[in-house]
Image (cartoon, rainbow, N blue to C red):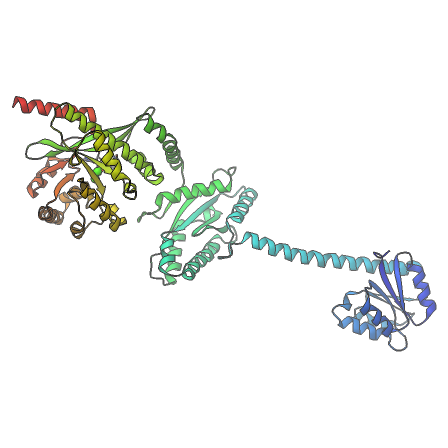
Length: 571
Ligand code: C2E
Ligand code: CA
Ligand code: CA
């Protein structure tokens, strides 16, 4: 009963009210009022869905009530149908101006009256529905906005980027799209150097720029912290221009710190893979230029994919390879220039792969450093070196010391010294036989830690070599601080010697310096007679390089030492 609509009939003549009430008794709950004031009281105190309003009444006429209702924000929602005697054209106009929904004249024709009321109500319902829909739409839009938009930057977030890019690509199959993935170099440093607000400001500025670049035919999104992506038609994307433009924008922020954006691009050649995979490919391309100074973007291609697959193969197989002794120790002797005989050797790892043949360290070392496997491989190599040393001794050969390479990773694990000592005990060797090569770049990374480790190593009697000296940032000053026994001059330095007289002067002072500091010096990567002569002239005695010998299987090295021993006996 209560869900029926309520009709208020306002007329001072009772019979008129009764006629209307009769027409609508079935469909409406009827309420009656004898004048405008009474009607107003009712309207304000209960829910009324439609008003049938006579114009001429005592106390308060219909026109006055209509005016009041029209001005009230709440009451003007209620439809009012004005009822009056025939020929009152003027009143009709006035009533309409005050928001009357319709106008019917007495005497009532039942069909017409029902029709009119029905139409007004239908119209109202339509209005309500529209209003409700609009309200819902606003709410929905707000909700969607909150879900899709990255709060910090105001562009699409990761999820939304995936969804929008997918539908854009699927809907415009005649357009070829590109996905570009961007990353800021060293953004963490920025956050640490400045404050969060500066970092946020940079991200917002970048986001705005990317959104502008994407324009109407593309989209931009923030994938995570300082990573952005755009998906745009390929012909729109001039990546060099985009990066240049970004440089300009970043410079204008005047942060006095190099903010460099790198990019990786995937040109969508297969629309059936997910956007997430497309992003991965762009990201993969990006990873190849990370940390490089001269390249700022790369485009994904099949070669890159092959490298990735190779990388996965390496990670998948490394454990088995270690267990089944696929890693082999090669040795490259170091020669004394004056005697022409080997005085030491360096252990270099080779992976003898059952299907792929010999793999050199440049194929797998970087991957092992990334995933930490290098620490275990190093331990394995140390043991191989110890085995070699003990078998030299057991065969009564002159024992030359072996140097092993030590990854940076080992420096952070203090347990490695115990491992080394354990090996020496196991093979009954003196610590002077096993030398450790530590690359110069470890010093740059964490000088304090390195100095600490080096001092401990020396305390245990190990000799330490500084590998790759001169390849990077090394300074003569650093030599004073570092307790190392041997300096291994990097091969890039040797190549420099032939080109520049200055390099020769520097080399001379390094040699002087090592004499004062009582350090030994070995020069790596000597390939030609010319290089050898030059170095000998400068006073270098120990040389490692292809000119004398390439890295060789340990068996070959053993043979070489045996032959030398025989020569000595014969000579
Ligand atoms: P590195 O320690 O600087 O080793 C010297 C590299 O130069 C070796 O490359 C060697 O074969 C090569 N080489 C020697 N003489 C010459 C020459 O005259 N000309 C030229 N062009 N190259 C020469 P390799 O064996 O490919 O090793 C590359 C790098 O991999 C090594 O550089 C070292 O950093 C790393 N590595 C090798 N084995 C191990 C290992 O067992 N553990 C660790 N942590 N790193 C290793
Ligand atoms: Ca080395
Ligand atoms: Ca080296």
